[in-house]
Picture (tube, rainbow, N blue to C red):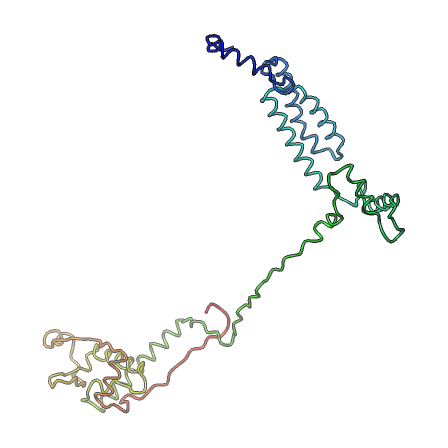
Length: 320
């Protein structure tokens, strides 16, 4: 009894009334510590036996342990022991559920479908409405089932997953891109011989342009390098003329306001550095400039003949 209850007689009287109304079979706060300790040990042992229940195939062991747990529960009168008992019941329920899921109907030592159906027919034959090989007395079977269940289950539950419709999965087919090997072109791999051949081709074109210039000089620079049939060859002509200018064999005179291209006397290095103020500029050109030059100078024919274009096609496989 608390100190406050001793000081307050009215509170003491209320506590005595409440304690007298407690059902000692369900809750007893004054249960002996030794009895509670012994009860907890046994409940813990019951809980630890779950491994044995899982390994055991049949249900007789589970039934025995649950029966023993019910006997122990009669002495449970406090919350701590009640928690241990509820934990054990939760474990046994999970084990029993798993055993039902793992049950293999139709195998040896188990209930077979033929045996189940024959028992149903035998039980129906005792009913007044049973017709041999035509009709079962389901009303009579229902009365038998009520002894074990509040509601007789219909037969459709036996179908189980057979009633489940399989979901249709729409799968889109992906077509793989196939490459035509005949249309595949990979970058050309240059060899040492190809580089030398390219250098020889450049020297050949530079010499050819020099010979043409000796025949037509002096001439407007744009009229000489511009090819109205090919923008790319116009760029090449500018490039080749720059080689001649770097060698000092050609020059451009703009004293008249127009760039006039012509040959110049070849001087030695010392005289060029000492006497002549040498400047070299490579002109840039785009498509708009190219069209403007053709229109301004009315260029209809190229002074430098159009060269044949060379296309390299690689055969075989590789990256593309």
